[in-house]
Amino acid sequence: MKWEIYFFSFPFITARLLDESNWSEETNRNYSFISCLNVLDRSEEPVSLLQAIKRKLAVGGLALVSFVIPFKPYVEFESKSHRPKERLPIPGNSYEAEVVNFVEKVLIPNGWELVKWTRVPYLCDGDINQAYYHLDDAVFLIRPNPNAMFTENALKTKTFHNEIEVI
View 1 (cartoon, rainbow, N blue to C red):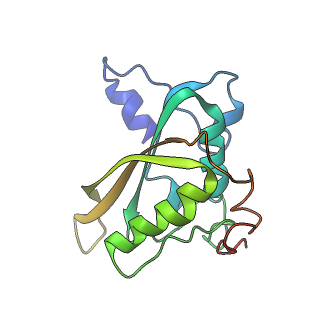
View 2: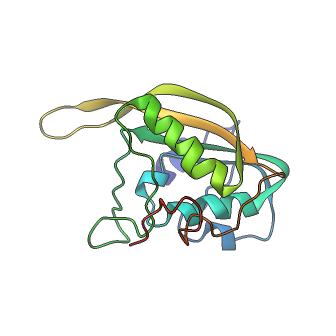
């Protein structure tokens, strides 16, 4: 993905692409906007990633986060088992249930406030049986909630609702 964005180098995009694994240590600056599109379900540590995004946002900053529903985490490179170290309690029996679970069991306990969300189509590369697949993406515009009552590691340490399974 990075290669494609650099290759096509859209002149109106003045963004810097950073590596998912160590992006928050690459620079000392904070950002007014951070996008994390279709990365949470591929991250070995999605809770830590959300916390890093919050730390790197400037005051008043926003984050755009998305993932495919149904949520099925699969870590391609960092894990031999392809399972994340941190699990998010997102799964439900419908699209709407997974959205509600993400907001109520991940965002709010981790100190985020939902600004807006939407459902969008997501086309991904196919395989030998099909050229591409049509999936549903959930896209969330979020910001840190300055009034949130939580501990920084609430989700990682199982201190909130005891619903995150840390492997």
